[in-house]
Image (cartoon, rainbow, N blue to C red; front, side):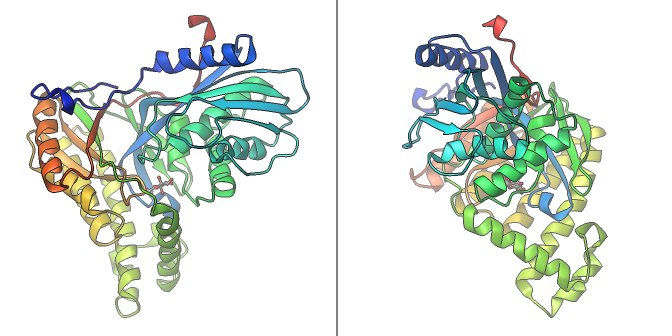
Length: 408
Ligand code: GLA
């Protein structure tokens, strides 16, 4: 992760994110101070940003996310008990208890809420888990639409594999366990995208996921010429807890009205069945059908180094999410509009579930500073100081992995 200071005004420094090494070191120190010994198991998993393919993972579509350099880290050790678990988090900004004890042989969701992601993965892992102590730390912004929850789930999964020695061989199975955890322990009926990219991310690659069969393809990303700018609107995407399940339901209803089993069997002509039936469902289905097509095309364009076309598709995706799927918001629209007028920008769109959170902008590497300045100025002016944009520059990074504690 890099940060771009706005040289004209120190108060406009872009967000400082703690480095990977610092995240690991803090967790080790916290473990030592809390439990009086060194951890011997450590794992991490990244957050993600989705380049294109929004709200289509639960509709058998294609998505094209990349893993971020920001990660959630878990360090820990067996504590010699059959099932007593003691977990502590270093997360900033939570009002909840930062430490909790529970029994791995009788897992149930409860409070603190952050622990439910860990418990959910333990529950669905399907293995006996011995008692352990652990510390969780992260530099993925929480509630910003960069999949901090998937990062926590996949980090937990990777940690448990190492702790118990029972590895889940297939990446997709690993991601599915984490997705189930999110459905049942966090009440969020998400698709598979966030968890699968957190497992499978690769440096300098975006990941094309076919969500119908979970087949993945690594797509080279020319990080020497291209930059991915993430702009956090500052608007928390809380609406997504009610609106996300509502959108899922509408997509399913539209599919049934079209008389189809999968959106992959649909095309623009299929929409005729909805024209007289329901105007809202028509627009929802139109987004899904066109977004699946755009994403498949975008992956081809990225592969062919046709960045202009890739950018255009991202911008079209935003319009479709704004007008047909109605998951954008005023602040995200302003960020996208500001980006599209900024130098070197190839395309821009909201990313993730929507209703706040972040935009993702594809731009030429040599224009970063000018583009950030311009977006920041326009956003500050148009949202009237209510929210402050935060900027991150991300290159596609590696997915979940074990951390070698000898290096610390
Ligand atoms: C959230 C969900 C994902 C996906 C996106 C929208 O991030 O967790 O599964 O549906 O929204 O594309």
